[in-house]
Image (cartoon, rainbow, N blue to C red; front, side, top):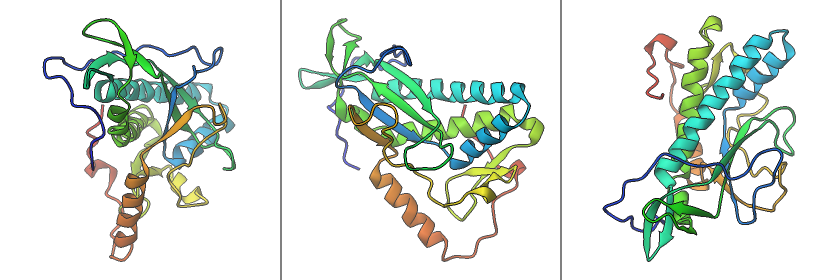
Length: 248
């Protein structure tokens, strides 16, 4: 992969402290904001629908709190990895302005389809001098796949931890496929093997530039890996006790 970000200054350390861009839902994102749209597993939406249909407010509150933890972790990761402004031909650490929004539907897809919008401001305050500069867009583009991996991993880890009572666990429903919820067997209810979402214009139409996470190259590579894996024998997913989740 060709890196698109400016070379970073050598004597400035990145920070994990972002600040809010706007107050959702009372305000709108400003002109020029990037709308980074992060895919989540389709079975996460099925779990959400199931909890909404049950008379169990405590479980639904746990679900929402879990998604919030994963979201805040992803905001920090976005800031840590992509938090740079462009100034004097270099990338300088900054405090990105980010507002996360968990959105439950995608136009054109029936039912729930949870995903994450990260609205990132077009400018930010540099750490070194406290002045506002344009963000280094290339630094964001370089880490969109990492943003997706961070969100996916945090979702898998924290839902597994918070829903031990129902022995929830994740695994690949097919050889080399992205993880879905296998217990309870929500993967069996999926109407399609499509995992990644396309652009969602259900919140702000096309007013803001949409950046898909992961990007097209990652998606194509993932589908090709699955295609090749489908040609080989597969023993099925590992038992939950044999898996290690290196995410926090």
